Length: 504
Image: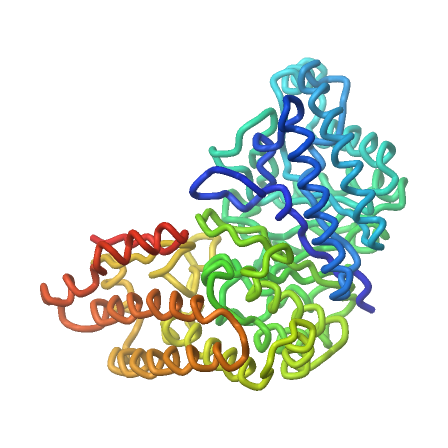
């Protein structure tokens, strides 16, 4: 029975973040002021935004939020004195944030990477010949004791912080082999069982080391979970496919290979599909996954990423700003699909009523057209349907667009030219999609959704249409020039936080 409906609540912590390209993978702790004249105002704003976010998430039906991260709140005597002082301040501020979530009836989970350390911790571990597992067990034991209001920890072992993450803690990949991860879980789970809390273990990896195929390889998956599947504190969290949050991915077979309690990860602010700047509707894809998961044993919930993911200049804040309406729509429909078992059409109708939109049928038709355009023009369908691997990573079903970048290069042309046989069909599809984009503008006006976002989508996808001509037609200088959009348009789009054009 599904009883955990978890959503990430990191948006309030990015308000006023000045970087042009934002790393949305984790709260930017260097941006959070702990002293000085602006500290009180910043945290007052964070709490106000979090109160708004929690109210809207609870009204939709979510019953838990995730925040970043346990490492910044878990104190230990081995840390440097100045680090412990900052941890004390973070604990005080996040304690107030947890109170807000609890007032709205929401449980609180904290994310955590394995492994973050400081020079003093590394020195102690080496001198005393401790294992990292032993240190983390002691660290988390204290964290769960100090914060009885924390429902659990969401553990990521297959990806670490990027170099742009600043501050005391920057995670690094520590667990490298399946057997090592199994021992790690057997060390930590007794701590969570002792406190009656949940350890949500994410299988997401980026292909590094022997553990890099955990999210799709049956043998690795079985080895990691050997002897722990019956723990009352373990929940395994898996993305819906064998890769990141892309289309054209069949449901991950590991959902059906074990009786362990599990949740499915969904992304409603689609980091590879515009980040909520235009409609990238997930309703029908997620409805299909929900039906298939009826056959999965012990599925206990969902984890929705409505803000987390990607390095992009887009900055709309989900459930906080009216302009984030496309992400809000996906987030609304996702919970209705999995919790209430509603059909997409019913959920869209209810969303239109909640938002007082004048014509829900026009909105539904707009979403149908958008869904088609995403599948057929943002992706190259013939390529996207192929199951390709390189070492331990499934090749993404989309190559020519990544985050806010469009790649128009000879290398992409050669790869797509090799894997796509029916090039004429791809070009015909392009023209049909451009017609649908024009229809969407009229529908946006009829249903009361932002027409400017459809205009932006059309501008972006017209660039993709030109790029497709370059990919699938014989090379000529005219096509190369046509794929370079007017400089004025690039500057206007960049000011909005739009697509960078990478050509070569």
